[in-house]
Image (cartoon, rainbow, N blue to C red):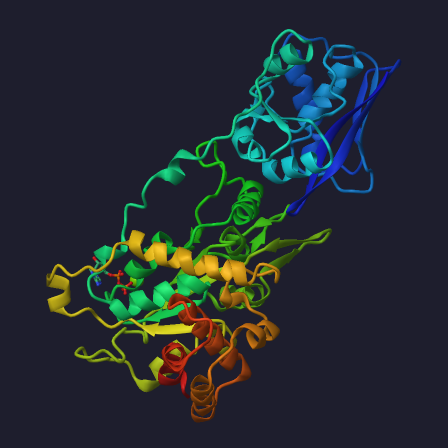
Length: 508
Ligand SMILES: Nc1ncnc2c1ncn2[C@@H]1O[C@H](COP(=O)(O)OP(=O)(O)O)[C@@H](O)[C@H]1O
Ligand SMILES: [Mg+2]
């Protein structure tokens, strides 16, 4: 008896169709899996055998060969348990339901419980595109898959339930879509809690509007971490497309839960400075996405930047520029997206008080230089904006002046981002920070005075072509914030302010 059951495979962010072909013939008891299975897939035999036995079903007699087609693609992971089980049930005549347009993925426990898998969302998206009508998967993964239109997602908890349905004795209702509860709740922190610091807040608002990378420099206790942690509260809303893209990555990393089945808010990832390069970039025998990819369409925040290892900082350089990261392994190299806004905070020197208005810095000039040189030139260059966070004065701290709430700021940010989404809709990027050099020429139209100011600055500061583009991108965002199609002097003037700190600290 021969049967073919549809399933899926995963290669990075993409899923591909896999057919589980099972042949049972007369002969000595034998059970093997072929078709480039890895160790986890090979072990499937034992889980399938035990879960069948433990659900009071006879394991089929004879010689069983399971082939995972296409045979030239490597099969990794434990989610072939479920289709293999279904193929055995089907080959021994226990399935009455029509499953020709169904696909199955899921890991089994020995007792027959169906356990959580990684990558359910990208697999379901691919299954729908292939014309599959019903997608059977672990119940815990069903909420994330349910965000795909045009396919019924069938949640299964255990083998007993599944068999009941396949025999036609019971029904399992397709998973309904629900907006994750935790995503609806408030942040618990707010911009208005930050007293004073209006310049820093303004800079963060600009950065949020245009998706610009920003570096915060200031003495300890100035409020750098406090400010950065409140950035998520003013980030622009995600588009539907961005939600799905980001959720796919979190699905593969196994980070989605039934309560948080879809990422509807821009991620804010804040890895500790002891993070490994694999933790940042992604890795493992089956390479899973790292922090930089988990931050896709959101923020990667590196607090205490100089404390990160040189290797960690260097590995980020290219991905930040490209918006994608490639992880190479012996037998595969996978590419994950990582279009992020990079935010970092640092002290200006080892003691922290270099440049402080009242406290005296106790570091020698060499110590300061050595400390600052931990940030390499090319990495420094990735920051579009630099901002100094001065210690907040007592009057501001003691006063009640907190300023605007995050909600009010966020409304403005949303408006600006909508302008940018609309302007860049056919370009492949969605905010000013991601403009290509060609796009900068096209979209950053200045009036004469603004152009003259840029030219003068260019000569006076000895700017690189890249720095020039960055100024124009920031000026573009600032102009959008004041509803101006043309970039004017005041926009350029403000943009230049955000490029002057590297001269102050890194001039030699
Ligand atoms: N502008 C401010 N308004 C209110 N509290 C502040 C402000 N700046 C600093 N603080 C207080 O000081 C603490 C330390 O700030 P933090 O963000 O950790 O500083 P940094 O990261 O610059 O060393 C904060 O948790 C907060 O309680
Ligand atoms: Mg801090």
